[in-house]
Length: 161
Image (tube, rainbow, N blue to C red; front, side, top):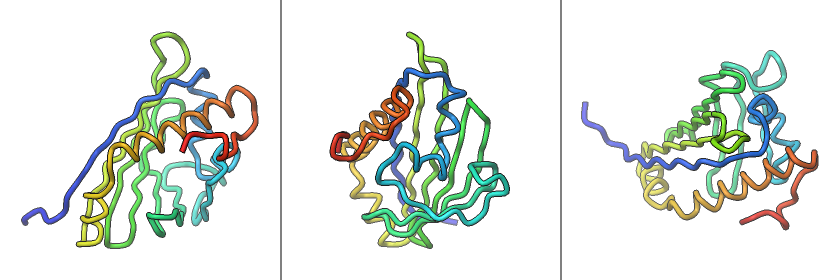
């Protein structure tokens, strides 16, 4: 079978001044409400009420539309992985690996692999620039670091855009 889709992959590594055991629980559709001011999701299935293997949730993010997310890997304080799909248009594998930072803290390597499936999805993937990804990840790092240092959410008007 011939491959018809297109793919782009981006990785961003951030160092957060906290231990992995404190960071990992925040990488969850429910706990993201604590630290991401623009976060919104609908948890479809979770036996524990938070992220777990097989947890399913939906998001409707501007410029992305409705996406279905499934937790496909769950290794507390080490790694979490999500597969997210936008209907039959595109799919994304999001992998987050947590490792001890060289100078303390924790390094989080976020790898997003977007695959366009239909014409709209392939067009979306072609137009998803590394610069936009970098800005989104810088804002995420700023929010996560702020929350772990202060226990309070950093509002969007103060975060990087």
